[in-house]
Image (tube, rainbow, N blue to C red; front, top):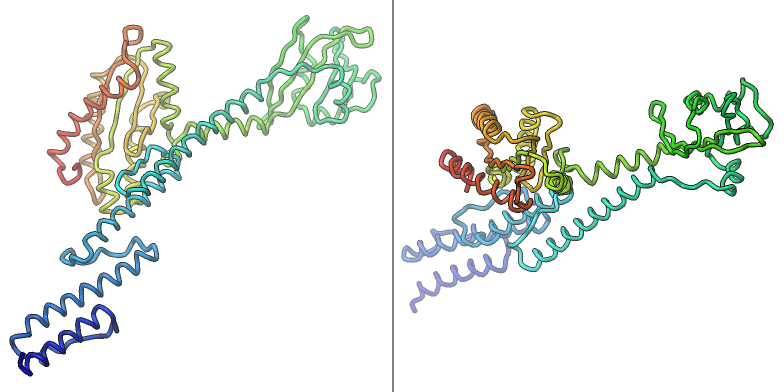
Length: 417
């Protein structure tokens, strides 16, 4: 090897060493190399740029900055990282969907992490079922009829319940545990109760002889459960009314029901409600029309324009469908981009025409940066003549929906892949 070769090799080797081991300020002056080594020097400069881009990119990813721009597509060092970046972006969106209550999210592209994520969604689904059981118990508690015995009556003076004894014939109030004594009470009785129990007239006018009944009444936003039954009180035929404030129970039951049966992201009914509703339709052998709808290109919108745009895409679609159908029709989200609409009666042809018009409007009138579209499949459920299970009905609607999706794919190949 000549002296010239040694000099060039030393310069190139030193530059390569600096690229791999630092310092980051390393540079190479091509003019210091002899002509035969210029191309090799430029190649090392390209490698230097690629390594710097790799280090900057991995630094941002290590901090969790998923908004960092993808490196140049020609940088071969970042090819696998680009794919990992895309996977992390999609995974972040899926985690956000799970946080909103969509437990249909499933991962199959991240190895052992996929198993952990999928196990987590299963556990969350089980918690949803537990929430449903809690809802059922709360509702049962508001409707429960308890046999009030003598011990309970004796304790009422120290509790929040009202116990009022009313003469059957004269409507005279003989006893009220809030009054503090047991003597007959005159007609001006209980200014306190009139204020706290504004439905006192309902109790005084109760006239259900020989009947034990639990009933509910409310005033504005306050609810009471009243247990009424006839007794003989101090040799006078009377009614006993035990009133309990159940406002908090009502609110709790309503809150639990709302959480268990509504999709957190859109506010419409969720998969749990849909399954129970359809089971009722099938068990009662009712005529119905089921529309299976799939929002086209949601992953494309999420990956290209961001998940906030994807969420807006979903919400715009939901509002469009809701505005075109009656409030009494059941509209539910059963997956990330999957929805079902259930209408009473057999009306496939009519609904197909209506959905075709809605689809045309959705595709042509949107001012979004991306093309809007959805696919649909409609199935009639012929009441007593129906022999299909819910899964078979959905599978049939899904098959019809894919015929629509193939047509949409021809029009918008970049949206539907």
